[in-house]
Image (cartoon, rainbow, N blue to C red):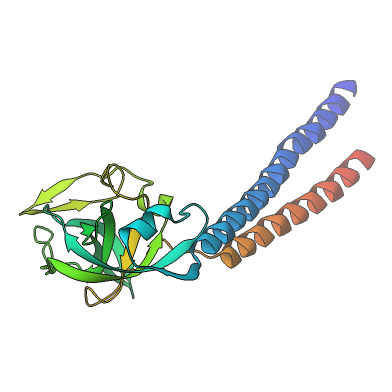
Length: 232
C-alpha cells in the first residue's frame, strides 16, 4: 500500500540522517587529534634549549623569552616564604610532588620562579616530604615557559605545616617574577620532568588514523546499506 511504501522510504531516510552525522563526528575527532599533534609539535619546539647560557639577571631581562628555552647558570639566593608542593606529579609510576620556590639573582634582577625538582609523596596524606634548600646556591638548569599543563585546573591551595600544597600553579606565580619558570638540576635527588607533554605527537597521529579509519568504514557501510535499501 501507499502507506507502507511511505513508511519504508521514511525509515531509509532516517537511517541516513542518523548514520551520516556519526561519520561526521568521527572525522571531526580525527581532525581534532591532528590539531593536538600540531600543538604538541609547537610546544616541543619551544622547549628545545638554545646553545647560549644565561649567567646573570640582566642577561635574563634582555633575553627573548617568547619562542625558545634557555640554559641558565646563575648564583641565586632563596626568598623568604613557604615552599610550594605541586601535587599529582608522577615519575616511574610513583606519585609525588614537584617543589617550587622563589629566588633572586645575587647580582640583582627580578625574582625567579624555580622548580627545584621532584620528591616522592609521603605515606600519609597529612604529611609533606622534608625538603632542604640552601639559602644561596648556583641555579643550573633551563628556563621554560609556564604551559597549560601547570595551570589548567584550580589551584586548590592547602596549607600543610609551614608549606603549601596545590593542585596547579594557577595564581601562584609571583607577580614580580620573570615570566615562565626555571627547571633546576641537581638541587633535589630527582629533577622534575617539567612541562614536556605526556602524550607525544605520535600518539595523537595514531588516534587520528583510528578515527579516520572508523569514519571511512562507517561511510562505506552507510553507502552500501543505502544503495541496497533504495534499490529495494
